[in-house]
Length: 183
Image 1 (tube, rainbow, N blue to C red):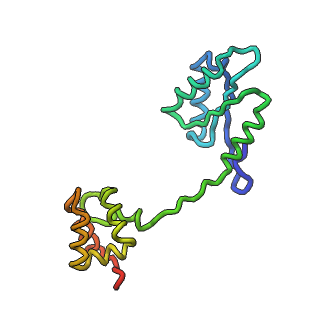
Image 2: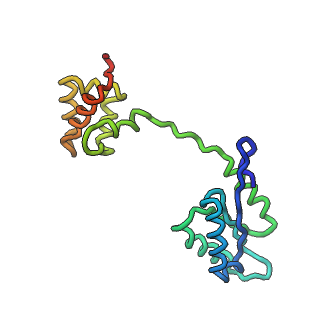
Image 3: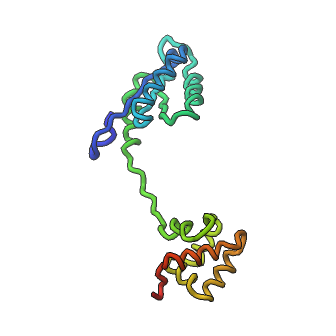
């Protein structure tokens, strides 16, 4: 099934299974494994028929067993199918979900770069949060780290739980010569 009209068409491979297919679990497992390995686990899915005519009433039970068996080993999407007549609607609904572009996450660059703005041990999340509260940009961190008053403030604020955190930031600014706001 094509993933979208705009981008290059991609093939999404789907395996149709039902509770009767699960009677020979090794055969079903081999089919699922083959599907998973064809594309490295990308663009594959399973549509599982819950109620088949003349079949057993174990559809939901087998569906849940399949989900449990794949949960730790594979990320294959498993879609429940109530009846064969709903196949097209199920596939179309799934295709629409695949084509949706997830909203891009706004990255706060200074906040994301702060953990790398020190020398020595990795900066803890707690230290990063405190530092981002008192300095709103990398140049502000540089400004604080290059003045004696700023260094005292950094040492005061960043002393707990790691007393060397402030010195790691100060050393980083000194070594890398990050421009301060007044430069």
